[in-house]
Image (cartoon, rainbow, N blue to C red):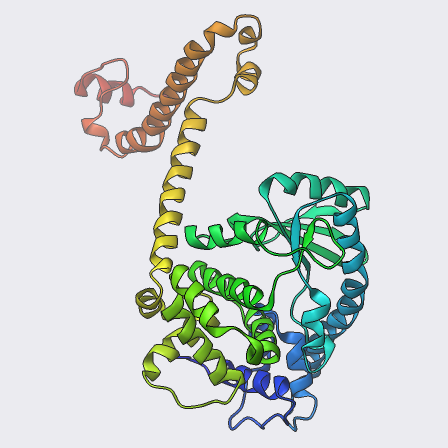
Length: 405
């Protein structure tokens, strides 16, 4: 149930670009500002730039410039990451880091045009134990840590080289976490390498599909992830060992959902063949394009992991709220010393000062309540019914009021 025509036309443009076909003209007017926001939200604005080049539509120049700027970013990014990837892998090998990486150079060459590539980082998978060592290695070569919404640690170096390091916590599902750990133990090393592992095509496919499924469950799946998966699938699917893949998908407990997700992607970028249960696929489209805000009920029935993730997030939120309350009620000693310097000499009094602080806080609340709620009501009582604070009677109050000033 995609609500807007912009969403539908965005998919049409992406399909045309990925299949190197002419972009069809829209059949109705478009909100191009919305088109850019939607494309940028899903990390595909640089690819849409190719789709709008030949359109006869009157696209505002400011919007065309925004798409062009994203295209320029991708042009610079591809060259920098391709050049830096092997340098980093050699660095991991030299430092004897047991890891695997998802080849950026390989995924780039699978796109019709290299600059269409949606991946923005060099991605390295490792154990949790190795994560600290990897950070120390990257810090020595001028990387700095950056915040990211992705699962993992993001490191950045000027002029735009991004490295994403993740461990088994990349996945929410226990079976997927076990699969991740197996990648670091049983799979072959890269040719000539002692530590860096090379994922076979079948297991690379499984890893990418697990990642899509996990992102779907968390509600942060994007069209950029789907495009990366699609070009890999289109390039190598004929050589896959499908019986092995289907067996592993069943063990991972995502076989049914994976089949539906593949059909949806084929509907978008592949043959466009008709499918049954259109309502299900429309709900999945809405869920993906809205990043989990629409079509959630239907998606939860297809992928129970969604409900598991939601329940866990709710438990984590309640636990976080409880921790905040506890930390407010019982601040650490250093903070309490700023309020009560005596505590610096007699630390055993910390519980006493916790109670004193709480009692003073309750006292202030009571005083504020009296000042803001009770006293204004007293002031509104008619004069003839008031008694003075000193306890005067009604007659005494009137006599006092009549005294000339």
